Length: 281
Image (cartoon, rainbow, N blue to C red):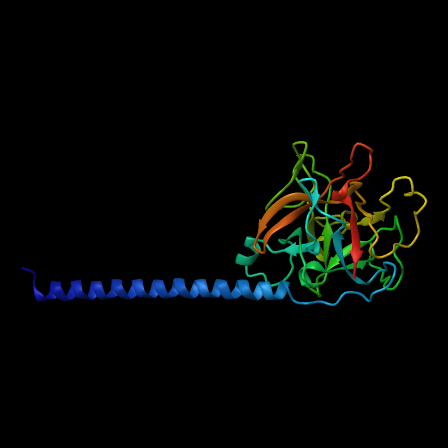
C-alpha cells in the first residue's frame, strides 16, 4: 500500500506529463500552420503579376522581358505549347530560412507561365554600373539579366567556369550532365557579392546575343535585335550557350525543365533547339 503523499505525487506527475503532451501537440500544430502560411505567402509573392515592356520592335536596355525557349523537343516531338519561360524557383532551404523574396539560394528553371509574374520576368541592364535605359541592344553587345526583386539589392543571373578542384561555381539542388560531365549551372548573385574583390567577378554575369545561323553571325554583329526572333544567349566568360535541358527538376512549384550553360550542336555543327531562345513582351 502507498501512502497518501505518494499517490498525490504520482497524480501530480501524471498531470504534468499530460500538460506537456498537450502543449507539444499544440506547438507542433501551430508550427505546421505557420509553415503552411509562410509557403502560401512565398507562392503569392513569386506569382505576383508584373508588367512587361515597354513593348517595342527591338530589344533595349531597361525593359522588362521574358526569355523563352523557341521550342521543347521531347521524344522527337515538339511539346505542347505551355508558354514556357525562364523562371526563378525558391529552394526548400530558402523556404525554411523564411526568405520571402528572390535571393541567392533560388534556382533557375524553365516553367509554364500563364501570365508575367515576379518569378519569370527579367530586366535587361548594362554590363557595368552605367544607366543605359532606352538604348538599343545589339548582337554581340554584353548585357546582364536582373531579377525584379529585391529592389534595394539587385540580383543578377550568372554562371562561371569550374574551379581548379572541378567544383561548380553555383550551389544547386539538381544538375544535368553532357557525355557524363556535369554541365555549368545557372544561379543568382547579389550586387554586393559581385565585383572585382567579391565572391563572383562581374564578368560572370555578362551575356550577349548571337544569330542562330553561324553563316550570318558575323554579318549581324552590331545590329539591333528584333523581339520574338530566335537567337542564342552566350555566356561571355565561358563562351557557352544558355540551354534548356529535357530533364525535369522536382521543385516546390512542381516539375520544371532544368537549365544550364552548355552548347549543343547537331551533325551539321549547328546549335540545336536546346540553345535557341527568344525575348518576348
